[in-house]
Image 1 (tube, one colour):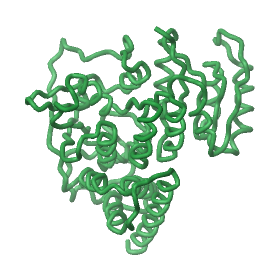
Image 2: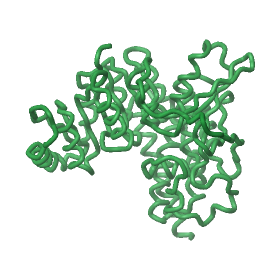
Image 3: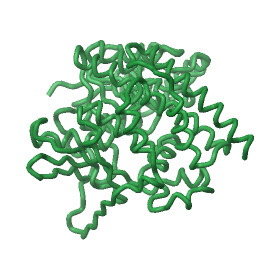
Image 4: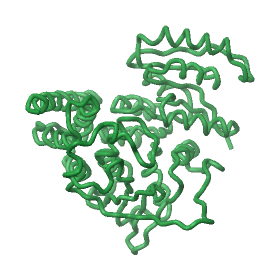
Amino acid sequence: MTRRDIVVLGSTGSIGTQAIDIVRRNPDRFRIVGIGAGGGAVDQLAAQAVELGVGVVGVARQDAAGALEGALRAAAADRSGVGRGFRFPKILSGPEAMQELAGWSCDIVLNGIVGSVGLAPTLTALTAGRIVALANKETLVAGGPLVRAAAVREGQIVPVDSEHSALAQCLRSGRATEVSRLVLTASGGAFRGRRRADLTAVTPAQALAHPTWAMGPVVTINSATLVNKGLEVIEANELFRIDYDRIEVMVHPQSVIHSLVEFFDGATIAQCSPPDMRLPIALALGWPDRVDGAIGGVDWSKSHTWQLDPLDEVAFPAVALAKAAGKAGRCLPAVYNAANEECVAAFCDHRLPFLGIVDTVERVLERTPDFQEPCTVEDVLAAESWARARAHEMIAVAGREA
C-alpha cells in the first residue's frame, strides 16, 4: 500500500492533534508533509513541525511569523528523541497561508480549521486535485454549491465529522437510489432533556460542559444549542444530495450510534463505535480503506442500553431553522452560520442570553435580502459580512434593552 502524504490545516486543534496521533502510529501508511494553524499556539506548532519533519509550516497571523521562526529554532535545538536530521521548513504566514498550504504537493489535505475561513483552502485543495478530509463543516454550509462543483471537476471530499463518516459507511450497504432517509444522531449537548423555560439563565460555563465529547468552545456551544446539528443537516444534504425532508435528527445520549441510513425496503443500517474522533479521522485519511486499530471497539462482554429520542424542536429550534435555510438556498446557510458565530461570541462574553443565540439567528434570517446562489467566494463573504453586521446590531439592541 502506497504511503500517503498529508497536509494538516488546524494542526494544533483537536482534530489536528488526533490526526497526528494516527500518523505517529501508522508511519508506513501516512506521512505529514505540511501543517498550519491560526497562530495562537506557535510553540506547539513548532514542536509538531520539528517532530514530523515537515517541509512547510503555515500560520494565519502575519504578526506570528517571527515568533514561529524563533519557536522552530528553539524546538530544533532541543529535539531529543527526533531520530532524523532537522531541515528548517518553509514558513508561510498571513491570511493566504492556509490556502498556500492547501495547494502544497500531497495526496490528502485534512481541513480541521474552525469557521468559514476554511472555505477558500478547501476550494484550493479540490482544484489542485487533492482528497480533502473535511472536518470544517462551515465549508459546505457556507459555500456548498462552490465546493460541490470543485469536487465534481477535480478533487474528492471525504467527511471527518463522526455523523457524516457514519453515513458514508452505512451508504456502502446499498445503492443511492435505494436510500429512504438519513438519520443523524445528536448527543443533545449540555442541556439535553431541558425545556425551553429551563434555559433562560444558563451560563457559558454550563454550556461548555459537554457530557460526551471534548471539543473546541464554538463547537461545544453549538452542540448545546443544537446549531451544530443544524449545520450537519445542511452538510449531509450537500454531501449526499438527500432532500431535507428525508434527513432526520434523533437524540442519542450515549454517542455510540453515530448515524443511521434507512433503505426503501425498511432496513436500517447503523454505524456504532465508542465516541472517539480518531476513528472517522483515520477512515478519512485511509479512505476507502480502514486503518487497523484506529481505536478500541465496543466492549461486547458488557450489557449496553442505547437510547434514541425525538428532538424537542420547541426547546431546540436550530435544526428546523437550518433546514429552512438550506431549502431556501441563496446564501441563507452562510447567513445562518455567520450570524450564529457572532451570537456565540456574544453569549460567551455575557452580552446575549443563551436562548438569544438561535432567536437572533432567526431574526437575521427573516431580514435577509434576496441573495442569489453563490458563484464565488466573494459572494459567500458578502453574505456573511451582511449577516454579521445585522447580528451585531441586534445583539447591541438586546444589550440596551436588558
